[in-house]
Amino acid sequence: MEWGVSDLACRRGEALVLRGVSFRVPDGRAVAIRGPNGVGKTTLLRTLAGLAAPVAGSIDAPDEAFAYGAHADALKDQLTVAENLSFWAAIFGTGADAVSRAVQAFGLAPLLRRRAADLSAGQRRRTGLARMMLTGRPIWLLDEPTVSLDAENVARFADAVRAHLAEGGSAAIATHIDLGLDADPLNLGAFAAAAPTRADDPFAEAIE
Ligand SMILES: Nc1ncnc2c1ncn2[C@@H]1O[C@H](COP(=O)(O)OP(=O)(O)OP(=O)(O)O)[C@@H](O)[C@H]1O
Image (cartoon, rainbow, N blue to C red; front, top):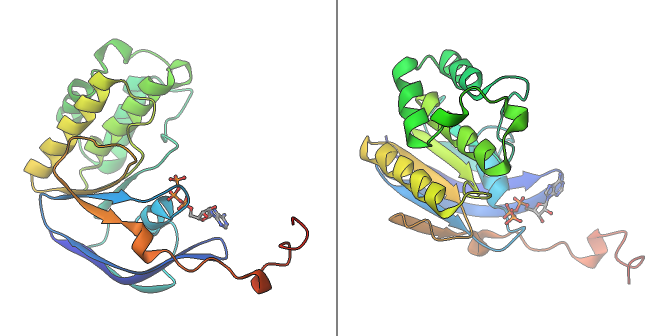
C-alpha cells in the first residue's frame, strides 16, 4: 500500500529537529534516508514507528503497517537465536515457514542454538534483521541496518529487502552507504529545523 508523510515536523526530546518533511512511497519501493550525522534520520524513523508523536503534520499509513528495526537489535540475550525467532513469529503471528525463510535469508542455521548473549555484533545484527521478515508488516523502517555486517551479509540484507519489495512491501532505510538497492533518495538536510540561536541556549557563553 502506498504511504507517506505530509508537512511532518519531528522532535527529539525538547528539540525540534525536522520540519516540512513530505514524501510518498509507492508499493514495492524503498526510500534511502540520507543526511549527515545528527540531521534527524533516527528521529524521523522513530516518529514513523510511533515511538514519538509528530509535532505537526501527518503520517498517512494504515495502523500497524510499520516494522521498526532500531540500532538496538531487540534480542533477548538469555534466549537462543532459534528461541528469539520463534518468539517473534509467535508475537506477530507469522509461523514456521516465515522462520525458515528468515533463517535461510540471513544464514542463521549454524547459529540457531547459540544464546543471543554470545553472538558477535554482526551475528546479532543479522538476527535482528531476520526479525523484520517475521513481523509480516508491509513497511520496514531500518536504521543503519548494515552496521557490523561484512560484505556477504550486506548482500544478504539487500536481497531480503529486494524480496520484500518484490512482494509489494516498501522500506525506509537510513544509511550512510550505498546498499546497491534501487532506492529513492530522501535527503533530510533540506528539512533540518534551524539550529537554536544563542539566545535560546543558556550554556552558549559557558562553553566559549
Ligand atoms: N534525547 C534527546 N534530546 C534532545 N536532542 C536529542 C536527543 N537525542 C538526540 N538528539 C539530537 O537530535 C538530533 C537528531 O538526531 P538523530 O539521532 O535523529 O540524527 P541522525 O541523522 O540519525 O544521526 P546519525 O547519522 O549520527 O545516526 C541530533 O542533533 C541529536 O543530538
